[in-house]
Length: 182
Ligand SMILES: [Zn+2]
Image (spheres, rainbow, N blue to C red):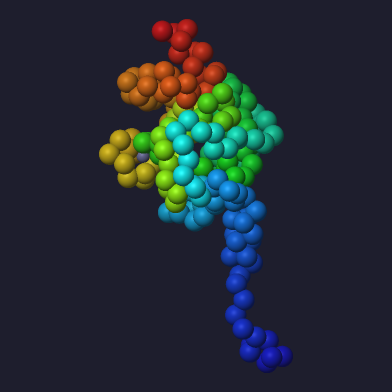
């Protein structure tokens, strides 16, 4: 029927789903929006240094299961030798930065490392949660500190490792290993 051709253009289902997703997982502290890496988490209001921004949550899965997730592998957060949180929104959308304004405490809490202004994207350093000799990714965070290839905690320069360890921003299973190995 030609009437179909006259109907006003409607947003594609992908765009509609994206808008729903953004609304569903945004709250008074943060909102989800598009950024150059896909989706990201942004501060809706000023966040104080040390404030908890969100808690990562989701089913616990093993390494083999993260591999079965294919390109979504990087979305799981490692919490043990063979244990990962299959992170649910909004935590799943937090991107990496080599000069992060947030970090992960107590294996689950995303905390602000400094004051974060409204509108700033919230990021943490993925290497503080990774020790698996498997996953590598390219980084385009654009900060002077950018390491370009992001891998395990043991790949970090020793000075950066020490800084994260002293701030309590390293997953416990990794921190334990580094303390015992001196
Ligand atoms: Zn970087």
